[in-house]
Image 1 (cartoon, rainbow, N blue to C red):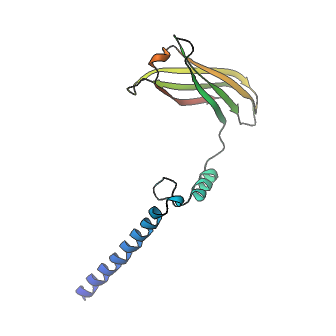
Image 2 (cartoon, one colour; image 1 turned 90 degrees about the horizontal axis):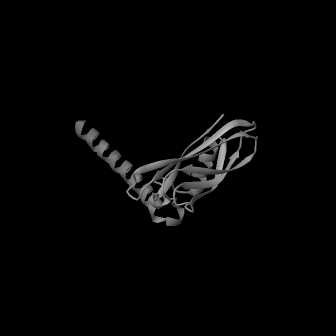
Image 3 (cartoon, rainbow, N blue to C red; image 1 turned 30 degrees about the vertical axis):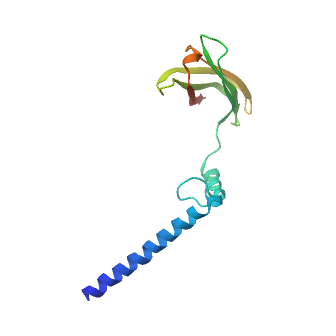
Length: 145
């Protein structure tokens, strides 16, 4: 009986392994079906699941651009849309600035008051950092109330 159990376990392991390897190889053989994410075989279900799971964003940021026209300060410009159904009395957007080595060298901030529901704000976040030292930036936070 002990040998029969071992043989059954080995056979079950072999079947399971072939099923797993068979699934993973079919995903990688069809490059058109891959999204570049591990385990995803088609783009539509992943996007649909993300849309269903993600709540609507309170704010949308667009047209972000680095402005290096001033030699003494760095600006990041763009637009922020209030997607809420209510006005907000205060909104702030914050960016972190990095040098060529990836070290943080500053923070750019912009804020405004009384942004209407559905309103669009053209912002200009400023940092007192020489633009020549800025290699990259990333949005850190949006605060609103």
